[in-house]
Structures are given as C-alpha cells and as structure tokens.
Image (cartoon, rainbow, N blue to C red; front, side):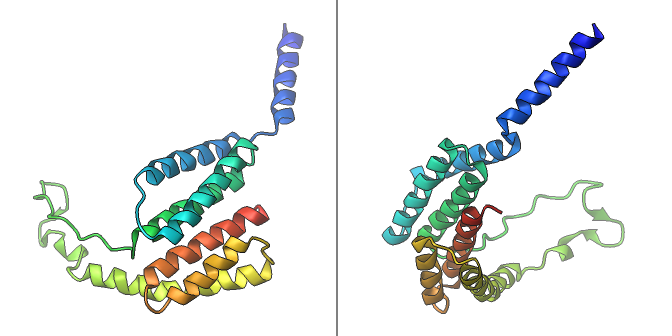
Length: 190
C-alpha cells in the first residue's frame, strides 16, 4: 500500500513538472484579460490611443493562447493603461460625504471623528503628485528603452508620444510611459 501511494505521488509530481505550467501566472493573465475585455467593450476616447490599445489587446490574447502567461499579463496591463489614457487626462476622484461615525469606529474621546486624517486639499495634492511623477516615468521608460534595446516599434512610439504630451497632459504622459514600461517588461520576460 505504501509503495502504491509513493508511486502515485511520484507520478503526480512528475506530471506536474512535465507540464511546466505556473498556474498562478495563468490565473493572473486570465484575470487581466477578463478585466481588459470588460474595459474594451465600453472604451471611448482618442482614436490613436484606442488603436494602440486594441493592438496590444490582440497581442495579449495571442500570448495567452500560446501559453506565455507572463507576457500576456504584462501586455494586458499595458492595454489597460492605454485604454485609460485614451479616455482622457486621469482625474482624482473627489471624496464623497463621509458616513456618520459609529461608536468605536474612528471615535476618540478627546478628538471626536478622525476628520483630521483626511485634509480637504487632498485632491490638489494628488494632482500635483501626478504632475511630479510623470517626468520621472517618462524618463525611466526612455532609459529602459535604450538599455534593453527594445525592438518593438510600438514601445518607441509610446515613449515619443509620452515625451510630446509631457508639458500639456502630464497624466496621459504618465499612463503612456507606464504602458511602455509594461511592454518592455513583456518583451524581456521579467
């Protein structure tokens, strides 16, 4: 009985190694593609960016079918960023009205509700942070493009477009640079 059980375990381990499928990567890629499909159905915005997003979406689906799950997940991430960029300049959502605090939920005897934890000018602060992060992301994408010698022409176009939009539309430039970085990562495999 023990020999049979040991044989079954060895057989199962051998089969799992022979398949060489990382199920976590496959699940992550499938989830990213499902989200991408949902976003792509109602996508509107700038035609040039939408065309790039649809091209990258098709690449992601091909990579998934070829069982290259890491590449599919990165390409799906890039397509999602391109769809967001096509919709327009990212806006920081305003905070809605806060529900009345319940006892034991954010109440402190000397301070009352913790309203001081979320200052009123948070929206402007986040917008300013996005404006500061955009040049860093564009610079990083440009340097990784040169360092890894990316062969993909779309990546070169994304970096060039991000550089052109940096002064006028820093939010879109940030999203384009992040999409270029995701495509570079997909191409190099890590």
